[in-house]
Image (cartoon, helix red, strand yellow):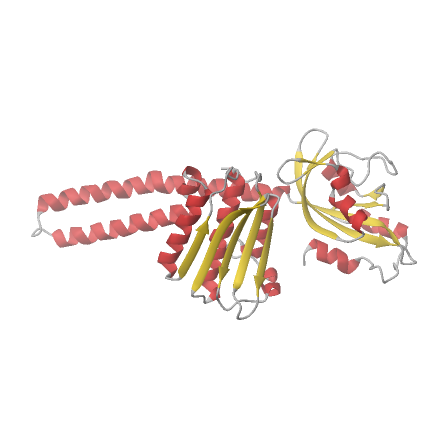
Length: 361
């Protein structure tokens, strides 16, 4: 269960009276293992726990009308732009009196260090059922983001080693065998040498495919558009499915981290079509809509209830829907999925046109 969903389940609704008083609620958040704090209706911080102090890197004054909505020194959007506290998820939750869940923010500490976090705001009500403020439970996902970055760096290193080291050895062996075949002639075990050459050619093709899967060279050299066209073409050859690709030019180009995020999501979405969809056609499109770059991958397969996919754990070689969504959120974007039995599946990823992300080259 997602943190935001769990909070809405545990905390009182506007139609139900709170079972415990304010002191019990403060005692509850003091025992939570993640950062949590409470604001009144005006955004004044009433209480917070020790993990919040660790996350913020400071202990803001309780009850101050100067520092409202959040106790951090500064907030930023996922793309690095400064987020005014009056536009923070807590401020939005108080203004609308509704839950604001799974919002990505960057918390800037007084020493300048940054923490990636997910905010979840749920309204609070007093014992008479009157709206009385909100609670924010903030999950620190910095380590998770660093793990994604480390994974991409390792993919890049392994792809380079495969191409530069193993690929060069196989290519050298192939050239030497061709020379031997030319010198020996067809009557002197030439057929065996020819078989070995075929095996080496196959090994080189497989090696290239693995390196491409680990880190697409087109993405670094030619950009996201060319990489997606190549991905669609390779998928059509491999899967024998009909693929319709409409990839528009994106100018200015997405930053490296955001482009890589888009590519990985398209890669995983196509892999899911091949593995599970039982589809005959796939449509992949990329374009700019307003201030966002939008990727769509839609198939005509058997479809699946979205709730089931939401609950699935990521596979060892795939991202899984939850991780795809986290990748999009890390660049300030969103990922939505529409699917139903017999109606196919559509994955839609939207990233801000200026997205930089946190997964560099």
